[in-house]
Length: 461
Ligand code: PXG
Image (cartoon, rainbow, N blue to C red):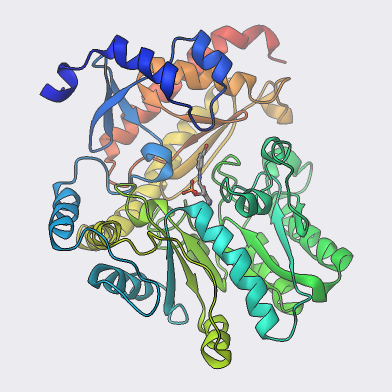
């Protein structure tokens, strides 16, 4: 532990946190009942330490974001240097800063040729809110102001702001705050384990894509602005669509002139073994929101890449797009993101992820002999373990999420941070993980599964 954390009075800090800190995505009643927060004080590589000195393997890279791992001095130095040069200036009103301009060009350089223009924001939520406004305005510039509707998927996650949560398909979120807003629609997620029935994954992929066409026809093809999807749904439970799904979605969207948004907030910057999830899943989006891995979470920054055909309308027609955040392209965050991408390139971390993908897949498959495990799946360094009460029938336990939470808690106790999305356990470790560390992660996951089984054995069919 650092001298700094040694000197903390942790009990006092926890008391203060309960008194003053209102946390996101937290059940505040049980938070109080259980004695407040776990305090994380330090991290290095793929490991984090809490204030009690417990060492945990961070199987989630923070919240799917610390792709280059913890403890990168280069990133701290990039921030320090930029703060001394220019801690802040804006990018509004025909002004720029050196790091924001350099970062736009850098992002563009790792994308397909048509993505030359990058709009900066501070988070994935803001990226998606920006897209809703910009896409509707784009269609207006094109003389098709009636194209206003967006189609997403159930259990899609695109952020917590009003428009981003409307694009997303999280029922619990929609029930709070009057969502979705008008004009946002959702179709079945391509989750074969839960919905595939007797179909082969490839057959099911086509069926799930057909749901999108059905929704388009129901709304009237001319009224639909865009389809949004994560190439692999993250928070929904690492839903890796069958390989037939995305190419079919692309065919359908092209047929009706509907824009495709690939939400790369989790999949981008190497997570799937290529720079972008759309490359791994085989489709060509028009718009790409990104955040998380853009700076590996070292500072908040997000961005949206727009294809030339969209940007051309703004260049040709003129007129101001009245949208932007004070900190858009913040020079310190941009300097850190720039250095982060340089690290991904110089250490060949995308290639490393591609090379380790089959190793993680095999490690996860080794868990399939466990009575609780109905399926495992992964691409690159993002994977899932499905918990089932009857693996042969792919049957779930009652009260979705209950057994997942038990497993998540056992995982913490064993020393592994593994998240539960309902009863799907998910893993997305930093891309710097080694084979030996994957073995350790798998060993700890099995320990958590064993402890979970002891708790729920009587419910197994
Ligand atoms: N798109 C995707 C695909 C995401 O995963 C966002 C957009 C929103 O990004 P911001 O930066 O506004 O959070 C996300 C964020 C979870 C969890 O529980 C996942 C996210 C955020 C919080 C929790 O898995 N993803």
